[in-house]
Length: 601
Image 1 (cartoon, helix red, strand yellow):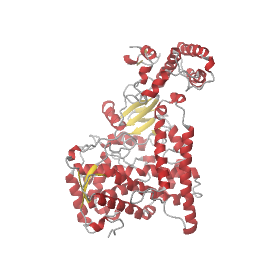
Image 2 (cartoon, helix red, strand yellow):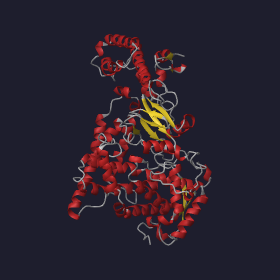
Image 3 (cartoon, rainbow, N blue to C red):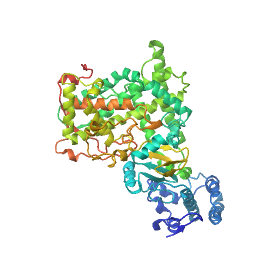
Image 4 (cartoon, one colour):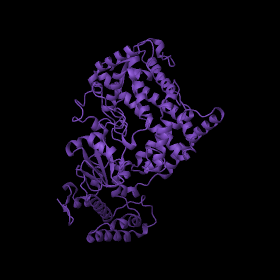
């Protein structure tokens, strides 16, 4: 085992399986463990434009190395290869195959030493799993990241270091550490790390979600809290919410008549999609029969294409000094941005014309257009804000309700108790409304318990340190990416009694805030980055859950026991169920109450 030492610090020891000699001779071995193994393996055979590598990669890098012998080794190797392939100087670096072993050796050596340089630090960093050269801990991270980080926290502590390529990430996994991050240190931890994909989607942070903390963020945050998510505006949009929940109930009632298992995700997702597009754009793209208009087709294609483009950059986002090998799809991003902007501008123009005839409407697009001059909002910012609302609201409520029903099917005693409360307060001659929530404490507790066990975004969107701070006694250097593992905090046995048990009574025994003031429960975030639409999101989860429980009894399909329901999470930023929930729905009320538009009273 080889040990690399600096004069001042102890060595960084490479695993024997990745010693420099084996690494250079069998250069493909390192790529076999990367997420994009097949594509990355090509790197060991690519013969490219060495002049590009020399000028854009090695020359800026070599100045940081103090060991002259290392610099000279790479210099000589690259010069030799460059001279031997001078005739290739006009060839695109991605179109020619590298067959020269010295070229590969020099590049890998540079990457190794760059990684080593990045790991040298005078800071007291949090502990964590030992990183590998070049890739850091990327090969150690399992697909469901928040679970992986929770397991590591049990070994290394509630504040841990994770290296994604050369970038230090710090993950906090306890309520105390979260309080430090989101309250005591949030002045330095409220910005965002802007990836290339996020930069394109947000027009370099001109929205709210990906904006750095500064004057722009403060302005658009003010617009959201003082104009968009006010009690008055949410009240004016209540008929939209109740109409869409009624449509969901009517569709379920129609389809459960033959007693066949239903895919609940289909119904809650359609409801969430129509609800958020109506609130934001004043548009219902999908009708009660599932038909979708032309704008709806375009809308869904834009969302789908955006997800594909974002995923295409995953590897190079983590290892920035490989980006020259994975060029940004500028043309594809430009086309996607143009499609998104054209659709949004067309909808905005429709609302401008309607406003001239009938006065401003009450949807989010109307509000932003009416206050454009007052807040000096650019068209780019308005488009970014509208799509932020779509992104934040399209999946999260549907996910939360699906998980809640899954837990209620697995815990039928809890389901019965919630239905008894609904029958006592609402009765069986009308439908439940948001006005009933204050008299339904157990229903509220069920919603909180579902959000505790299954937060829709279990790993909070990343924050960026704009200055060096301390969390849990450890240094978090400037530029570090900081994550809050909401999932781990919500299941911490030092905070929650029987943390894995679905027991809503815990929220009746103690009043625990859910909107960012109690750091044990953070489904909507906290601090300067807390979700401005938390109240709207909570109202939607409670209303959907109340209607589903009041109108139906829920059970697993024939032959499936409650305990056998698959509760595995699907990898991703939001936690869909890996296997969509299949359930039997049995109506509980008279048929007239299942018609969409039936009177609440």
